[in-house]
Image 1 (cartoon, rainbow, N blue to C red):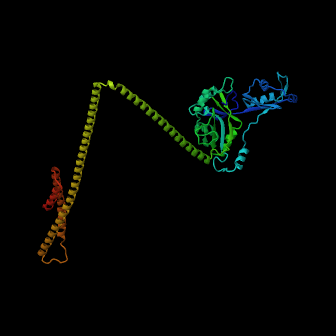
Image 2: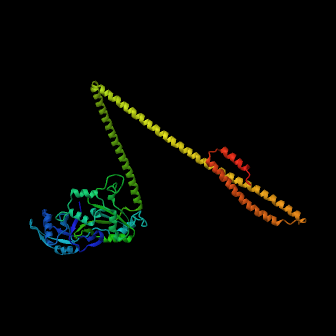
Image 3: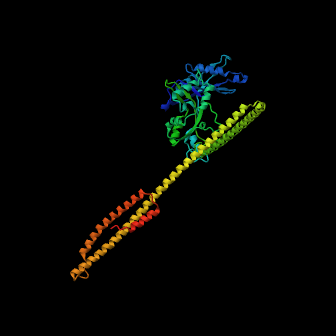
Length: 507
């Protein structure tokens, strides 16, 4: 049953979330007591409560009750509870109702009314401090085990849907109440509310006005959460148009602000035309450690277990469904086979020459197709083998060229070293011959003085001839390389070339 009603007086509203047009409005309720006279208690006369309620409504005109209901009916008194639009109207009605005498037309009896402001049940600061101080197992250093979480019941689902703006939510709320202002229920609205879910982001945006929120939990968003809050079954929580929420603040001051702000308040939303709708909510501090780390971890583990069980159940259901379908298919094929056999037996006498010819042609056609397929596969295999052979030959040629290049490099280095050694020996011999000639011409050369000019000349000659020798060796190697690339030669030819190069006189 929806708890949404239309509000006409907006004078006492308190802003909660202006972007979403959400406010808090004080609850103005009064208690009206009607004592039964002692004479009527003895006789046991039946007093109609509806007539007393009509008289009370007449006394507060032109004001009206949001609702008026009977709380208690004993042999000594009647007690009624009524809610008005604002605190100011409630005070005015208390003045008109308290100590007022009414007379019932049906019985002619007179009753004196007693009216007072209703005291709504709401936890105080002393209560939650005493609870967390005296309850065993509480650790005020851990979140969820201290005064930091509020539990709100009766929040309208349509007001916190992510895909609806506040105007659509207000229009939906208007559709949920009747022409008289009283809430009504319909099958269509109930179906929509069950399909749509509230948004935890919208909830955090609304209640973050009191402080930074650490985490939130909406049991209705968990498909495996049962009514008692334990996971493990796939029975969803049955709700009408409202949902519960657990909101945990980072700081104690945020929790205190939220509790104080929601004291004796109800939630209100307005549309662009400034038409307001209010909903009664119940706010209390969390007494079950719902958002403690231990309980969160426990719910997560239980949720994983429930998910796995659900997957196994779905797999079993799918397996049974597949087996049933397979069994039906086998039965259908069996019936078709029986029908075909019956038709063959009945029409075997009508088989003609043309039918046999068509069967033979069909067999030939299938045979031709099969031979064609085999030929194509064989041709494709030959093409693939040929391409692989070409790639292998190219790879081997490339390896041969690299091997020959390495051999030529080594031959070039060896030839250069041999020629340099040979040239050094010749220069050394020339230097020695020059020294002998100088000794003969001078007749008395000092035995310990080296021939400096001859050595210098020999060194210059050596460096000059060495450079020329290198150029000549490089030119000869280039000629050999050109000859190799122009002709197809084997490894033996290369070795013979190498022998020829070593024996050839370069200088």
